[in-house]
Structures are given as structure tokens and as C-alpha cells.
Image (cartoon, rainbow, N blue to C red; front, side, top):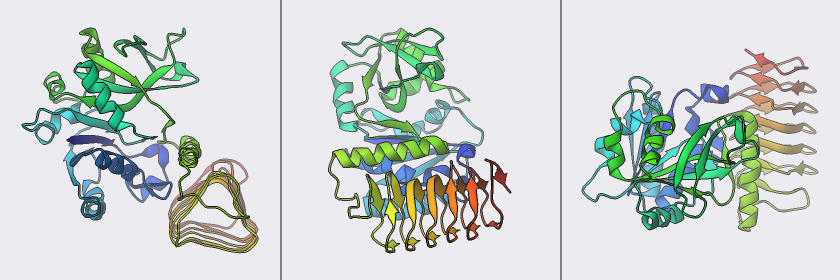
Amino acid sequence: MKALILVGGFGTRLRPLTLSVPKPLVDFANKPMILHQIEALKAIGVTEVVLAINYQPEVMLNFLKDFEAKLEIKITCSQETEPLGTAGPLALARDKLIDDSGEPFFVLNSDVISEYPLKEMIEFHKSHGGEASIMVTKVDEPSKYGVVVMEESTGQVERFVEKPKLFVGNKINAGIYLLNPSVLDRIELRPTSIEKEVFPKIASEKKLYAMVLPGFWMDIGQPRDYITGLRLYLESLKKKSSPKLASGTHIIGNVLVDESAKIGEGCLIGPDVAIGPGCVVESGVRLSRCTVMRGVRIKKHACISSSIIGWHSTVGQWARVENMTILGEDVHVGDEIYSNGGVVLPHKEIKSSILKPEIVM
């Protein structure tokens, strides 16, 4: 079986982290975002993953070469020379996706984090006999999204309503699809949208079916949603009583700590924290609702909440970092500095407090 991951563009919403690596390689819960997806695909028998990409393919491929060997899965790139939307890349990668087996293939949005019930999706797809299956998820505020109107008992999709003013339903496209190869015949090689052009056409022929995603779902393409996504992800690990979660008197709630990280005396860590490889957390530090990426040092009595600390950064003694502060790679925050929502570009030194949310060039 094969799969295509829509990687797309520059990841501007996750800057400054994406100034250092392409967005799918930004760490989420201590491993690159895209690896969560590739591992889930591998687990249900996918043998080849195609990355649809229009930017820095060599960085992606060099990085994923290691994982190709480790996971024993083939990873290739299909590079756009111009942005082709969400359907164009399928036409471009057509030859990579089609083989003699006639099997359906998966398509995933690279920003989506969930429990990836792909095995159930294959069963669902086989059972309805349609041309395409999409995963949908229930949301509290459907007016912000494109809503999928479907027949509840069979899952047959009737229509799509973009950002509805009146309530028509609360299920939205979750960005995970399983498509028969025949879908490729419907897509021209030009910038085109799978959600707005291809799926409505298949739905009008009553060949599109939707499965409601069990468990959590989040599009983690922007910082606030990334932090929320981490909470949901850790919660799902907890439900599976995962041995990966940290425990101890200094841990509150769900916390992920890489085994190579060092944590000092008298710290209080959690809830909803991920601490990456090679990090050093000195004594008396308080961490909550944050991600601390590989190689970071947090000095004594610093306090960090609702923030993302990029690779190899340092947070000084008694510093306070909060309110969606994002430190790019190799940022150094001085002792006793306060950051209230600062977004700091890579390789900066912060010597004075950031009192209101702003970008520090």
C-alpha cells in the first residue's frame, strides 16, 4: 500500500521554528511531526510514502534517509515547481501512487495530529464500496471551517458547506483520506483544491463516504494549536497507559521526558510538557504547558508556561517565559528576564524584558 503526505509550503505560521527546518521536521512530542504519520502508516502495512513538497526537498530527504532504514519503508519526494493546491500534487505524483495492485492509497495533511485509526479506515472503505473515504472530526465551532454534511447511518457525504452562517452540522474534514486510484483520473495537473473541486464532484455522484474520527484531532500548524495538540496527544498516551509518560513527585499530570534529559532537584514539571533529548533543567525550575526542544538548557528557578522553546536555546536564572512565547533555535534569554508572548528569531540574545507580545528580529 502507498501513501501521499501533503507537505506543501513554508510553514509561515510556525515561524521562527520553521526558519531552521521545514515544518514537518519541527518536533512535536519529542519527534518530528511527520514521523508520527509515517510510523502510523508503516504500522498498517504501507510500504511507500510520497512527500508532496514545494520547498527544501533535499533537507527533508536527507533527514528522512535515517528513518527509511530504521522503519524499513520507502520515502520519496514529489516536488512541485509551483504551488499546486491540495489536489494538483496528487496528479503530479500519479506515477508514484499507481501500481498494478489497484489498491487504494492514503493522503494525509502533514499538520494533522490524531490517533490515526487507519486500519479502521481501510475496513470502512472496503465496506461501503465507494470511490473515496474521508475522515471527519467533530468541532465546537463549525463556523470557522468547511463542514461536511453526511448521512449519519451510512456515512455517505451529501455536500460541503464552507464556513456556514447557519448550523448545518459540526463535522469537518480532518485531512486524512483513502482514495481509489480512479480518483486520480478526476484531477488535472494544475493548481486545484481537493476539498473544493474534487470531493464535491465525487459526493454529487454519491461515491464519497465519511468516517467519524474516534479520539482526538488537531491541526498543529500554528503555535496555540500546537500547544493544545500536545495536551490532547499526551492525554491519549495516558488513556493507553503508555510507559512513555514520566512519573515522580516532581511531575504533575501528563509529561514526556526524553531519557537523555537531565532534571535537577526541586523542579515542578507539568501538566502537558514535553522535554526533548539532551536538555538540562536545573534545580527549582517550573514548567507547564510547554515544549522544550532538543539541547535546551533551563537555568535555576526559571518559570516557563504556554510556550515553545526551540532547539539549543537557553533560559536564564529566575527568568519568566509565558503567554505563547516562541524562541527560535539557539536563542539566549538572560537572567531575570520576562517574556510575555515574545516571538524570537533564531540566534538572538535577549537582554531586556519583552512586556507585550511582539516579534524580536
